[in-house]
Image 1 (cartoon, rainbow, N blue to C red):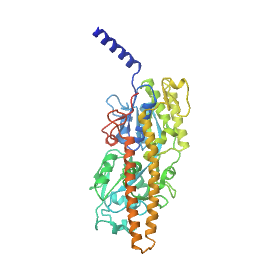
Image 2: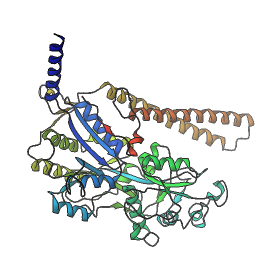
Image 3: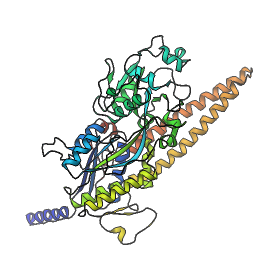
Image 4: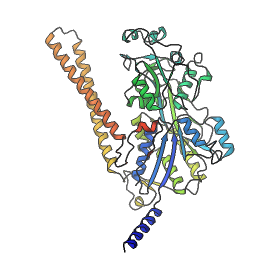
Length: 499
């Protein structure tokens, strides 16, 4: 009897599994919008009733393109290792042409824009307008090791008060840079060449370049952050959202209109201002660039992040084909792509969005066997159809996602209170410097300023921890990966919760 019951249980389990096979998608590429992509992938796992696994390996744009193209894959030339790739640079014209000559081709799907920024760890030098100003020619000389001290005459011309802030004269510059194929390297080297070709020649432009001797190799976003933070006097480059999240000190760069600004002061409008029209999704994107565009408030190093998808995805299961198309559609839904604003990214403009939708329609017409997936919004209930298979429903949530939403509201309230405290500190400081000679009054002001500063510091630290909590994992329940930095080093895989 026991054997019979056990056999029956195994049979029932096998039948259930066979009826609900895991629907998989796997991609790899740029580290920059990786947290944005992981958040959306996790949302998919929470909003479908089928068991879904979507993973993304953050390994850099160059390696991501290599895996997507599969030019030298042992399984066969031009056979992709992944279902999609991602990068902050387009596939080059040469690779695009070769892929078209050997396969049905590909589409570029631009979905967000972001900023690449320079950050530093020079002691005593803050960020903001009182911080460090640099232009493209001075940066070129720093990265080429032609300027090796922070009090070099060329730097002092741009920063007259810098010498008095440095720990000592001839304070050395440490240059942190990437080594493997990186879209950040491609973007900053192209920017330096475009803005100062006399100091940064064309042969020094690319995802991988030959760096000057004495520069420090810091590969991946997490490693670059550690290099800048752990070695005083370091200058390096990283996507601005990551740098701000890690509370690194940003350098004010000179833009095409000769205005010094940070990506933070430029804001979303300054990043979006660099956008221009792009080609149809199935055409060559090799020459698309948003670097050093004109405008007083335009940030000079702006990138577009792309998903790379093969036109013919019939090699995938029908459900996975449909899931990939649905995933692409979600990248242009305001509520979904809005999740990426937490990481410093700006959605593409309406013109680019329309071009991307045409690319999605091309995929749908090229892959008629794809299983259609539909969406049920959080604000509208589709009674009956919303409960069907292959529906991504905004009505279907997990408690973890609900808790994150509540915490986001608390963070917003706390940030508003911190802003009010900052304003109070400025008012107190202004009163203190107005020339009041009363010693007791000054003592009270100093005490009040100290208390406000302590509260502000504590509040900022709480916000930092709460933001970390939102996107770091509970390893026990598997809802989120425990350390996003592992992924940025390519040591882990982020997958959505299986439902």
